[in-house]
Every structure is written in structure tokens, then in C-alpha cells.
View 1 (cartoon, rainbow, N blue to C red):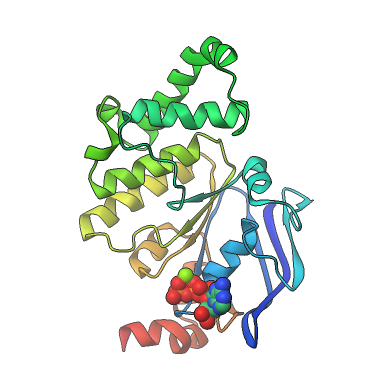
View 2: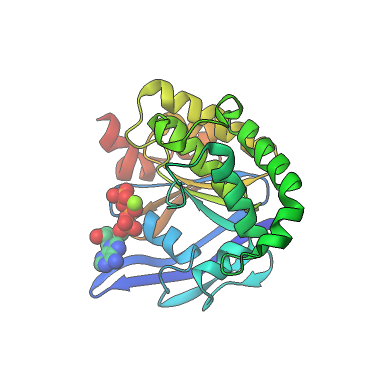
Length: 251
Ligand SMILES: Nc1ncnc2c1ncn2[C@@H]1O[C@H](COP(=O)(O)OP(=O)(O)OP(=O)(O)O)[C@@H](O)[C@H]1O
Ligand SMILES: [Mg+2]
């Protein structure tokens, strides 16, 4: 079953056609990568999915519900979370408090923080926060202040904060950019373990090791258009892809 359907989306910035009649269907529970050369339109597509950018034509359907003309906040509430761009880390707070704040915000609504009500739920919120911190591999640091985390661990915390909202679709834009090899490897493992819990993941990534390690399906964009789509082995051998993208990297 498709959880996300991108129908005929086009977006231009002035004379520049960033996306042109893009169609993509993402199956629930899969990891679906978007790849393509710089400027292909990948981030623009994510911006359309999160409501940051309004397309010129087309529609996005998430869980059978059209998403156009609703705010980024509402889209987030419906269950789409964009990872590694959430600003919500509090450096002076310990990890447990950071994740608990996110759980409170998602349960009480970002604009209605009811302290009394929240106190009553504090224990269940703490338990859920600990569960999430375990899921991202930070259980041994729940009492550390966020500011002391390494860069890799900060990313884990950001992911934990996203998971606090119980999203059903995670969008990741270049999650391993700038990472050392061992951090990339552990990010692959982490995303794999999250995906196993039946999470749907859409990932934009330049590192082909990450893409081939994680993807069930790959969509290749070039100059705003889908030029190939399929399972990794199908995309790997596709001459149009090699020419547009892989060829450049491996030339
Ligand atoms: N807000 C904007 N205003 C004007 N042009 C934009 C805007 N956002 C993106 N573009 C242009 O649209 C095209 C697609 O950009 P986009 O960022 O989606 O590419 P990308 O595939 O994510 O590339 P990269 O791999 O380098 O991140 C580029 O030519 C970019 O310069
Ligand atoms: Mg981009």
C-alpha cells in the first residue's frame, strides 16, 4: 500500500524548472531513496512534501489525504517528520529532558503546554522518552547534557526528538553529509533498525554506500524529472542513471 503519492508535481523558480511533472509512489514500511546530481530538485521535492514550498502544479497524497494548502505544522501533526533539520535541541538540558519536552509538545500541542495535565502524564512520558533514547542508541547518556554530545550523537538526539512525535514517515536530507566513515556506518545501522520497526523512510543521499545499503526503492531525479526508478540493482545498471549521475562520480 502506498503511504505517500506524489502526483505530477511541478515547481519553477522564475525561469528555472526545479521539478517537472514528478510522480513517485512510496510504499508503506519501505526505505525509498531519492538520488540525482546537484540541483536535480531533491531538496525542493522534500520542501513540497513538508509544506515549505507550494508547487505550481500537482498534488501530494499522504495516507489517502491530499496535503496541498496546509501548513508545515499541520503536515508534521499528520505524521511526516523531517529529520536533521529540527531546531529543537536544548543544549543545557539532559537528553531525557530533551526528548520528554518533545513528547510533551506532541501530546499537548506545541502551543498549549498544560503543566498540571503534563505532570500527571510525566511518568508515561519519561518511559516513552527512555524507550526512544534506547532505540537510537543513547540509553547510556540520558543524564548527559546535550551540549556535551559528539556530532554523531547530536544527530541521534535529533532523530529521537523527531521520533517523539510518532511519525509514520521520516524524511531525511543527506543524513550522513560531512560524517566520517565510522559515523556513516553507524547511521546506516541506526536507520536500518528504525526501518525494521515498520517506519517508512524517504532519504535524499549522495553517498551511494548509504543508498545501496538501505533502499528498497530508488528514484533518480535529473534536472527536475524522474529519469529512473526501481530496486537498487535495476537502478545501478541503468545507462541513463550512469550517464546522469553515477558516471560522474565513478568516472
Ligand atoms: N528557493 C529557491 N529559489 C530559487 N531557486 C531555487 C530555490 N530552491 C532551489 N532552487 C534551485 O532549484 C534547483 C533544484 O534545487 P534543489 O536544492 O532541489 O536540488 P538538490 O537536488 O537538492 O541538489 P543538491 O544535491 O545540491 O542538494 C537548483 O537549480 C536550485 O538552485
Ligand atoms: Mg539538496
